[in-house]
Length: 399
Ligand SMILES: Cc1ncc(COP(=O)(O)O)c(C=O)c1O
Image: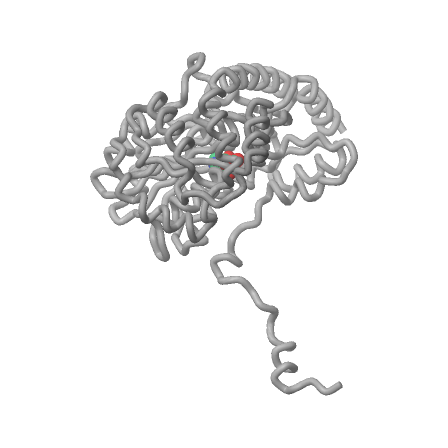
């Protein structure tokens, strides 16, 4: 069979490729380690940010009921009215008056982050992110062509802390947005109120957007029942602040893909358009379950935080007993981000730990260069499993 000349030349060209900014994105190193381990028998996975427990039954039952009642259709771009109303009350209870016209329901936190970035950033914009950080916050603005610069938390005897002046100096006039995740994944750092106020004042002066990723706000180990300090506590609802949140962490709903955003009401129509062209809406039956989570889930969340606090303390003390490990108890989220003496290639180390000790941890370098030498361990599981993980780590280090 003869091949036409044009067909022939296309076969010799380089294979088709994504846009340059997409091609340049960093693949997730957490995934790289997990992919190396998934399928190995008996691996203990502490690499992802989720609990080993299934979503509580009162929420699963609500979804089943909604499905049985036929909640299978498209719905409003901004979310079903009962969920927006429930979230408005919830956010108002936590952070002060937040009318429904400031709330949009999203397909989980990561979609809310993408929407926030799409709302306010574009090609060539300068965006600043505080790191170490879950990589999605840094990569999402890059997909849109923004230039992302990072300001690093400092690591010392008290764990991770922010030099506020360093951050303010990086927020030069003309900067479009700052991305701050507190409580922070991976470090557990919680931004103190004073630092939030200083950043808010500065951003007000220079017209800089604050994109606040507060998906771990409930996983906070301050006073019992307390919520981590939020930009929503101090900012007006029509200021340049977008708060991103999720059902994944406080109600163990990672696989449901449900979240929300708090935005100035003047942007709701535009946000509705973006949601239409991204996902159109979050699934109806999932949203109905979300209403039950928000309205009836407070006791569950408070109990979850108690269990996480005790798992955190258990893991930190077990790790601290191992030689060469520097582990601090985080103030929020659900990770111990510990330093391992002599570790210079955390990706390689985590791959070896999976292969040789069947222990699944996330490499610190996945969260930025400053995370090198650290390893992240998600402790959202029972203590027996943590103990078995520590035993495997001890065995590996002792070889
Ligand atoms: C800091 C941070 N933001 C947002 C998310 C998004 O979570 P989800 O998309 O499941 O709501 C995560 C998930 O781990 C996270 O760690």
